[in-house]
Each structure stands twice: as structure tokens, then as C-alpha cells.
Length: 76
Image (tube, rainbow, N blue to C red; front, top):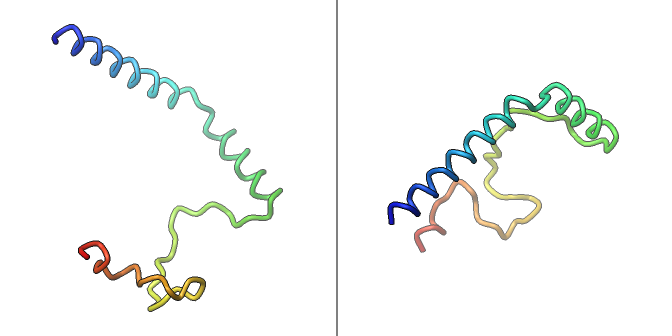
């Protein structure tokens, strides 16, 4: 029991270390420029950190879907 716990802890620690090293070593500016080039080539909308919340009463694309502000369907 203790052996498997130690092995799982070592695996978890190795995963956390590898994730942090990958985050620190990744070239963020190059990744952002690559994404912007892809967006320009595909003529999609640019990246945005904030998106306006749709407060309309119904979805014009799928009118049969329930309103997302209502939580009734979760409890039924």
C-alpha cells in the first residue's frame, strides 16, 4: 500500500515538474504570432479574451433549444 502511494506521488511530482518546465520553456511570442498567422490565412475572427454574453430570449439558430439562463432542465 505504501509502495504504490509513493510511486503515485513520484509520478505526480514528475508530471508537475514536466508541465512547469514546458510552460517556462515554451516560446509564447512565437506561439501567439503563429496563431495570428493562421487566423489571417483562414479569415476567421481574431482572438478575444472577453466575449459578450448572449441575453436574448431564444436562440435564432436553434429556436427549439431552451434558454441558457434557465436552469430548469438540470433539475428535471
